[in-house]
Length: 351
Image 1 (cartoon, rainbow, N blue to C red):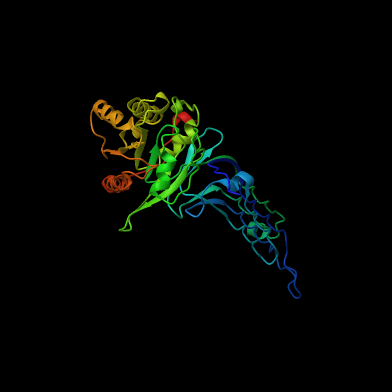
Image 2: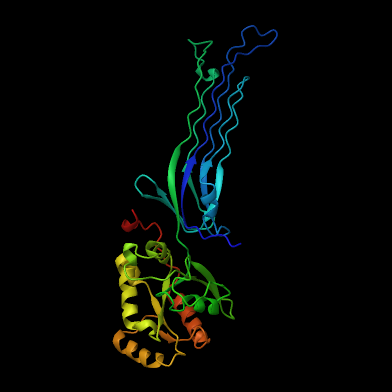
């Protein structure tokens, strides 16, 4: 059974408590006044998040939301310091945002492979009585308890990292197109919202060039205000370097491709103005249908200016024009470069 796609979880993180200091005096034969020798307690372990490409979703945290690092050991006699608690290192997907529950503020954005963030710190170990010895205090009976570790409630939010994002209304053919351009196998059906979670696919040409394409659930009017799948869709778009608008040129169910295109652009701009500046190309899909050629002429006439990556007539179902589209996608990726992928962007709409 396929695991569900989980991209937002609430977790409870607790650093390990510090160990207590030890109250001890040296007791050995022929050493009548050995003095205090209680050791310090060890510090508690930290809870650390580490970005990893091997982790696809946040599902592990959905089933195990409490993260607790081990505590430090207590100090012992002979000035032995207790062992510190090992840090609890937890792997999360690359592209994970860490938010504080209290105010929704972004604390860190884990993007790069191996990048780490200390979520909560362990408590400091208490001092044993040997640490309190002085010229005027020869036999102290004072020790410290270990400090408690930090605690906090946090939200982990995954924003998929992809080179390109497929943007379109439900039933525009995004899933079919992704299945043709890559080896991804998203769910494909004739009813709206068959894709309820993002799906990634890899486009690769004969020269070994590779880029990641994300099929993200379809938009509807008002998505910027969290209507429909709303922010569940839009937050993943912020990670992409450029966009591929997939439009239904057949005009099924009375839809107009030019209106759809303008509506999609408007929803992206209302959610995040920088998305309106992102490079894009248009995949004019369903060109195998009788009404599509005439609809494409009207679309190009009303478009005004040509998109940065061009308009490419295709039929994802029949395989028409896909080779030309793939080359255009790779060319646009090369022209765009790596970019910043919107790192550390704090979206006011989500707070």
